[in-house]
Length: 128
Image: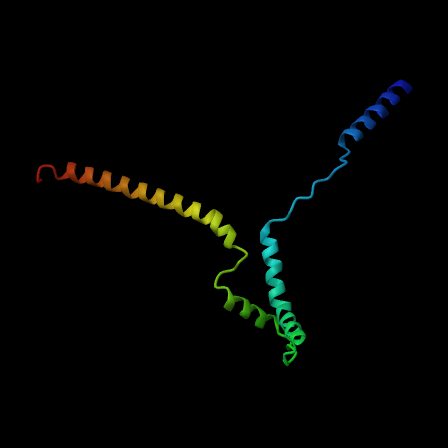
C-alpha cells in the first residue's frame, strides 16, 4: 500500500511540474482599446492641456469650465462623423463582406436572368 502511495505522489509531482508555466507572454490588447482611451483623453483632458500650454506661453486665457457628459459626447460626435472605435473593424471586415455580397447578388441576378429568359423562350416559342 505504501508503494502505491509513493508512486501516486511521484506522479502528482511530475504532473505539477509539467503544468508549471515559468514564462508568461503578455498579449497586447487590440488597438480598438487604445483608440477608445485616446478619445477619452481628448474628451476629458484636452481643454485643460490647451489651457496649461497657453498659460505656459504667456497667453491670457480663462480656465476651462467643467463640461457635462453630454457636452463631451456632442463635441466628439461633431469632430468625428464616424466612431473611430469601429473604423478599423469596418475597413477590415465590412469591405470583404460587401464584396462577397456584391458577388452573391450579381450571381443571383445573372442566374435569374438566364432562367427567366429560358422560361420565356420556351413558353412563347410558338409566338416568337
